[in-house]
Length: 295
Image (cartoon, rainbow, N blue to C red; front, side):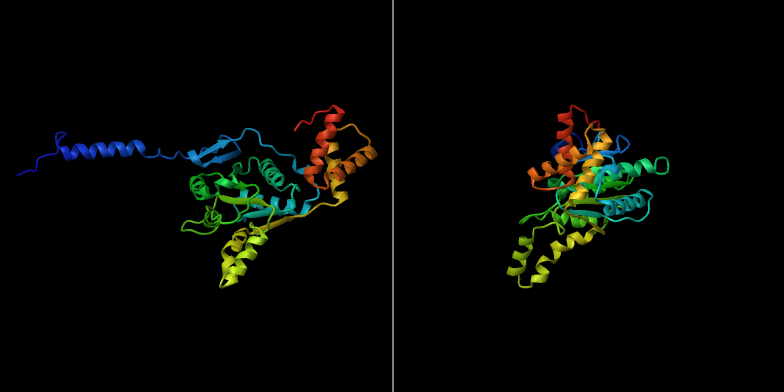
């Protein structure tokens, strides 16, 4: 005897169908594959698993970044190898504030695409915000099947107190079953070489049964970066070279002696010398001269 087929009149079946419909309504939509042809730069929004294209990246020409020649060349070489589908490292750019760490990443990205135009698919730059670092594994998974090579970039990365999101970063860079996709590298800037404050490391060392093991996990995060590029405070001559380079590039109408005197006075009032201070001076000077800075 054949078993009777379930019908809509069957209360058990009806209940199961209602449950299935409810689950389908509350289930998240299927994740769309990333379309990296829309732009060369994107911002990652984890809430909607969205890569928002950036029409115009805020950056300066690579030739205008002065006083960082060694790290500039090292980063450019690593980035070009990556774009050419050769082995390349994750990079941590650390050190003094205002010395062009994030500017260098954006400028090297653009310069690499310009030099390799027609030789390789355009290299993509994808910014992830510090507070979204826990979503990095999801972003890596989204990028894995894409044909393009992508630099995932986090500016001003650091960890404080009981923040455990660094574990997501470690897993995405080097750990986990899948590991980092071959078409992705991670570039980060930080004021800290080990991405955590010294007093936090000292506190863990002093209260642990085994002080060495207590901080090993967090300190080892920086080991996931194959390249550490250090940025140090610039000298007066390097600062004046930055100012002169900007003034020449934008054609500011001012005598060299006056430019030097004004630039030194500006740095004195700010109490520091850096690439950021040089750029802020140039913006002030251009405004006083009634000239535009076409960037």
